[in-house]
Length: 298
Image 1: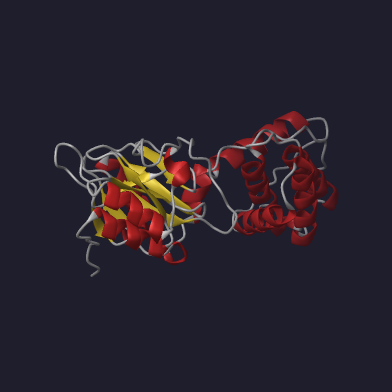
Image 2: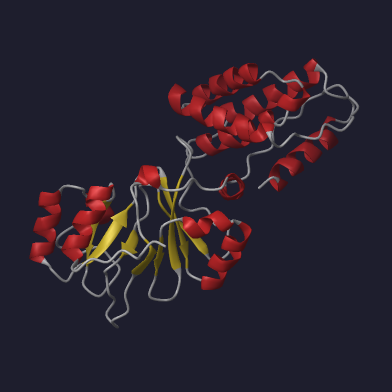
């Protein structure tokens, strides 16, 4: 059984976190906000440089420690302990992830995202859970103590970002925002090549038209949908090239687009999309059924 992480001082802890690969910055003693004098720009000044870290905490030994996890690291912030128990019951592997207990009895759970798969820190998909980390939102870390003496403690010790467990696929899909509905298409019944191509092109059109800030997750959502067509005969190579080209038209870099598309197609292939018979005169009803099914996957 792993033992909890303990550090004799905030400085020692901050240096240890930095050596693991996490940027840190000082918090106002007894509080959870950045120290206004030492880091006037807050988390934007988070650092892994030991000289900088040492200077901060020698100036303020009682400062708490804030951790800004890198973009590939997702921190699930549970305010409600029952929310943690409920989600752990659904995804038992979460129990092995690095976990910190908060003063209010909640938890910070550290997970790794698949390569180039990103989430928005503003997503509110799970009751009682906020999304932190990802280079966007910091968490308060042990041995920080609040003004009333309550502190943060590790129940499962933190590890390097690359050693964190991957977030369960089904949980990740739940956290991705739903995609916009694809444009209407007229398709044949069954899983004919013409029908599969029409659906793929409708997904690509939605990806190409995604506004900035939604492009990455829109691509993933429709890659998952297109992956669900692969068991019906859609070529995975064709699907990848069409989706990547659409994402690049939307403004995503090719490498990011290709990695995201491949991940989504692989996940979607294990979730075949049911292709009900439809009539060319009923594209709207067919699209509504397919879109509703895509939303339920999460």
